[in-house]
Amino acid sequence: MTMVDSRTNNARDITRALRDAMGININVFNIEIPRSVRATECPNLGESIFVHDPGGKVADAYKELAREVIGLERKAQVRPRSHGVR
Image (cartoon, rainbow, N blue to C red; front, side, top):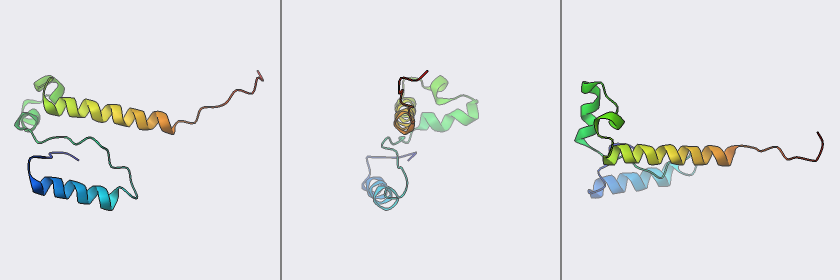
């Protein structure tokens, strides 16, 4: 979920409802990308959030999302088992 303002009851209610309704059938990532003025400035500047505000909460959230995606990918990989045959 992106542009989440977790300070509001409305955002928390919508997030919870989406997780409850959709999380049964599809993966809903744990990380939420917060709402940020700095992030909305990026398209006008032609910069990524990692250039424009590298230490900010949105950049950190996207890094965490990447870690979550990589973790899921690692879990999904089927590793062949060696049976001692070469």
